[in-house]
Amino acid sequence: MRKLSVFNQVSVDGYFTDPNDDVSWTHRQDDEELREFVAANAAGGGVLVFGRKTYEMMASFWPTPAAAKQFPQVAAQMNGLPKIVFSKTLKKASWSHTRIAKDLVPEMGKLKSEPGEPLAILGSGSIVSQLTEAGLIDEYQVLVAPIVLGQGRTMFEGLRKMIDLKRTRSRPFRNGMVFNVYEPKRP
Image (cartoon, rainbow, N blue to C red; front, side):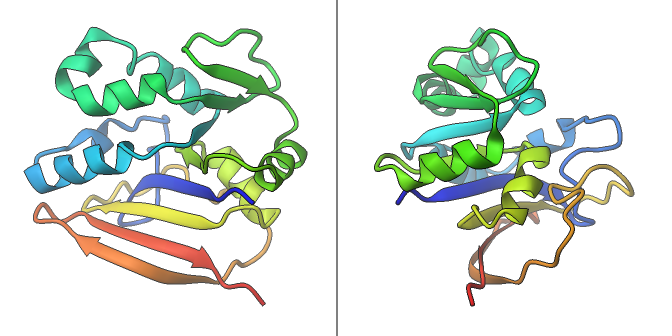
């Protein structure tokens, strides 16, 4: 069975975007230790999973020369990995190695039951909340930034039930960011 993980950066008050879906505050890579961690984290294999909004944002940056110059290792990995974008409206993929899927929960359940590389959701709060509610996410990797947004969107927006998690790892960085990993508590 394949593992499904989420990686998101959130503010101290729990938002992964501001009210206008701006995530520019997440690009503060002012710490060499954090840059090395991000590059190592991105070096893993697997299949990237996105909702349409995050996919379009990522597809507009990672294939560019600017991304290759700023983050050469991460850009190479992001561009080379297979990708699945869940969307009911997207007709054509604009980024290499991308497959479009429509029925989120049934398709993700099927993908998880098949042999293969692990699956990693980046951003994509709308699918995180749906897959959390369906009990399909195995691990939440959350990088907490020392910033308060005051309002915005959480990755669990619309969740209708409480989910108990247990922290399995934690790592602070010199710039104040903290990486936490959680797994759902299983009965």
